[in-house]
Length: 329
Ligand SMILES: Nc1nc2c(ncn2[C@@H]2O[C@H](COP(=O)(O)OP(=O)(O)OP(=O)(O)O)[C@@H](O)[C@H]2O)c(=O)[nH]1
Ligand SMILES: [Mg+2]
Image 1 (cartoon, rainbow, N blue to C red):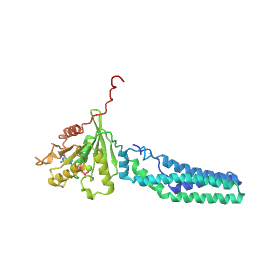
Image 2 (cartoon, rainbow, N blue to C red):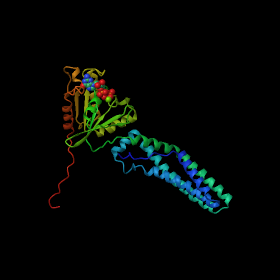
Image 3 (cartoon, protein in one colour):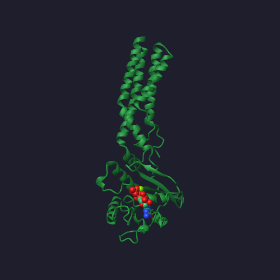
Image 4 (tube, helix red, strand yellow):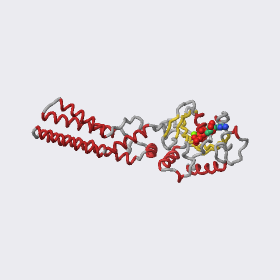
């Protein structure tokens, strides 16, 4: 995952403290012009190097970040704002280098008292620059914290998106089929998160996405983040599994659940297959609804494997095979 290794972002205050206290130590070890010059160089270098490191630790959103990840990232943070913040921090790094060089010349060309004044003025101006990017550093730090924990969603791996009203058994199903891989990652799209798990069939790794409270609401009740999350999911899905609970234990009558199914169907491209499974078969006899592809009971372990086989078939994933060299080449 491209955002995984991002280091913590220092705060402006923190960097200033570090730069000025190291500078003071360097200054103590010397005297006269030399002390002032060494202080300038130390503080200037620490600030500009640390700021530059913040920026270069990020992938370049214009080049290195694939559209899919860009969209995911943009669902969680404002990528434009983040890119602006990174540009500001780069500017600050250069600005502090310029101040370092400008004042080094001044310090060298003046008497000791004036040299000290110049050095102090340089520090004040460096602190000003740091003040100007205080919010940018905070935004970068918050973005890093939010993006670092994105689970490894891979656009090139087949993905099953599981939808349906609350309490119908979506998580029960996802937990059951991902038990072997024993890892489900949280994705902070919504207040309740989106979970991504994996399972393997015929040596192909599938992603299965649990979407509590995300797809079970009308479009106009979603906030911006949720809308973008839905849009990312819509692009990711290779197959949708819609889970019904005909027993009504979940608290939603069957006709209401079927209405939601239509809404979910409309969200995804027509080319994306959607299958409907009626869960909690231990709690109802027969289901009278159109377009139900299977029944199962996750808690009783009834038909779960078959439902999985059905969606794997629907995803019809063909791993890329190495293309054979043509004759005559
Ligand atoms: N009787 C019965 N209960 C089930 C079955 N599958 C799930 N449940 C129960 O239904 C309840 C809700 O299941 P969850 O898997 O949490 O439902 P969910 O769709 O993930 O719900 P949200 O996360 O709120 O959207 C739990 O108490 C499950 O134990 C089933 O096949 N039969
Ligand atoms: Mg759940």
